[in-house]
Every structure is written in C-alpha cells, then in structure tokens.
Length: 444
Image 1 (cartoon, helix red, strand yellow):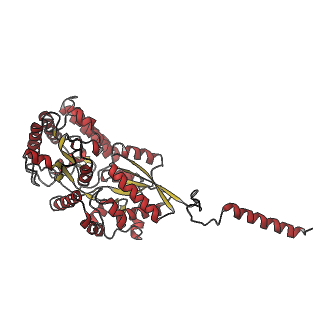
Image 2: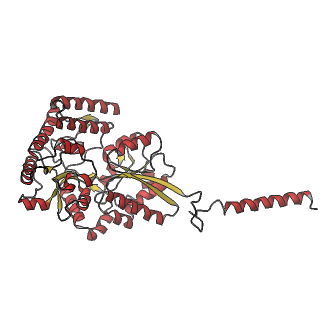
Image 3: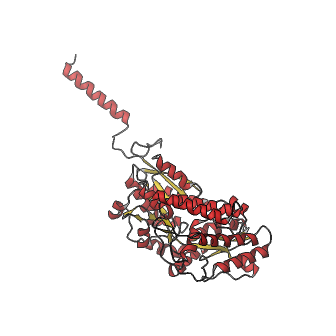
C-alpha cells in the first residue's frame, strides 16, 4: 500500500493529466478549428460590419471581407448591409443600445453628430503608430474625417455630386449633351424637351427637390454654406425659388410627378433612369458604375456632368467629398483589429483592386496609380469627372451640425407636401424653417 504522501501526489498528477486531455491542448492555442473544422477556438475574434449601398457594393465588400479572413484566419467579420433608407435610423438605435457593429460605414453628413455623441472609435493612435497607414492619403480627406482634432473616419473614396444622363438617348433625340458650363435654366429646357419628345410616362429627370445635399449646392452657388455655426442659412425666398423651379418641371413633364417620386426608393435598380423612364438623375459620381450595370437598356451609354450652375452665381457649388467613410465603433472590444481591417480595406492592393471605384476614386494615391490601366469605360468616366471637378469646384463645407438628420427628414417632408399640394408653399416653407431651427438648437 502506497504511503499517504505518495498517494496524494499520484492523485494530483492524474487530475492534471485529465484536465489537459479535456482542454484539447494548451490555453494559448490560436487555432480557429480542429482537424475536422468543428468550431472556433476561444480566442477567435468575430467583428460585425455594417454598410449601405447597392447589390454591386454588397458583392464587392463581401469579397474583400473573405479575402481579409483568408489572410487573417483568427478573425471573422459578419456583414450587416442594407439600402440607404433607414440606415442611420437603425445605427442610431444600435448606438443607443450599446450594440452597434464594430466597423461602420459612415457619411460626411452624420460624422460630427456620431463623433460628438461618443459613438466612434478614435483612430488617431493607430494612424500615429502606422498600424493604420495614411501617408499616401489626400490630406484634405484626412481633414474631412477629423472632428475636434481626432481622426474618426477614413475616406473610402473621393466623390463629387453630378448629373448622370443617358448619352445614347440624347443622341437619338438630337439633343446636345450638357457642357460643364450649363445652367439650371439649360437643365430645365433640356428636361422639358426630352419629356415632350418621349411622351407620357417618360420624364426628363427625377424630381430631387427633397434632396437636401442637392439643395445645398444650389445654396453654395449663392456664396454661402447651407449651415453656418449650427444655423440654417437658406432664406424663405431661396427655398421658394428652389421649390418653384421643380414645380414647373413637374408640370411640363421635365421631372417625375409627386406619385412617382414618392414611390421611388434609394435603390439604384429602382430609379427612373435605370427603369428607362427618365433621362437624367442627380447623384454621386461613384454611382455611375452601378447605374450602368443595372440599367434596363444595357446598350445605352451613361455619362456624367457637373450640377447645373446658377445665373450670376457667387461661387461654384461643386465640391469634392469623401464618398463614404469607414469608422470604428467606440465600444468595440477589438479596436486594434478594427483598425487593421480599415487599413486593409483602403491600402491593400488586392482589396482595393476588388473595390475599384464603386465607392469613389480611391483615397490612396499609389492605389489610384495602380488601378488606372485596368479601369473599365464607366470607371474611366468617373476618374475623368473627378479631374474636372477638382479644377472647377470650391472647398467643401464643414461636416453638418448635430440635428442635421432631423433637418434632412423635414426637408423631404416639405418637398412632398408641396408636390402633393398639401398647403401653400409659403406655409410649408415657414414650418420647415421653424422645424430646422428647433432641431439645430437642440444640437448646440
């Protein structure tokens, strides 16, 4: 019979061997699965990523995610994508519930609001350590992603607002394509002429009278920003001028009627120009590629021109803008890995080749140079357009103030009320200005 001390020692060794066998290896193992791929290890990192966009964007982004996972087998990324409609409403709810995705596609219009709410990860330390490489990024785009001296967002692509038009249709109708110098009056005449030539059910342009960032360009042409220190600058007279212009176009078929506009979603596949029921669409330069891909008339070539000028404008309304940003969630449990993926998305040669210019012209100068020889016809058109805007534009205004989301929603509502004849334009405009003041006051 074993002495008591030896018996205790033997029991301890047996228990230790049993615990090791049950653990399947050492606690520091980084393997994502066993030989039969039957599950993740305890230290496998899972991130969530959210973005909005078209099906084309979804497909390209998921390809980049898969490539990243192949190169970093210890990290998986769960995609959560949608269209533009309701994206920021959902994100706001997730932030309020401390359940936002780790990686967020962000827009310039909402950057300040989310940053000052403490919802976004400060990327400054990762840029300073060069874990997030920004050395070859346009300085103006780094500035655009900075709020209160902290870097909260990296530009995914450089964009500019423009008018996409069906160049083939213009040629068929014998209408000269718009030039860089065209005016709102020129646009109105062209839209009405197209509608008259094509007949009922076809429109010169989609009605964008309720699109705040396009109205902003109209206001910029008057020599000021839409906002000044958290205050709306647009006067009731300027708003009246804008809504009257679109009202005239609805009457002569130059723009979609209220019913058609209200039923049109932000999905590019459903836009009138894609369905072959309109000749022009106000949008962002990066969307030319997708519009071409989803167009019902695949034999038609689409082109893009700058937003029409105002007669006697005080400054050019066009500007270069971060197409979209990519940001991290402030409460992510894996900030280093979030910064790692952001760096991969904008700097990795394979990843940027997959994304191309779908979100805009790449922010990394080396990537732009690398992509040029392999660009498709539509992408060449986008790069050419950005060059034109860079030479014929004014500096982008500061990010929109807190409260912009409510102003944007109220502006769309005002447009619909006027289009449907729900009250006089003067009454609707007065109510919009009051709502905007109240929303912006809460954000101060």
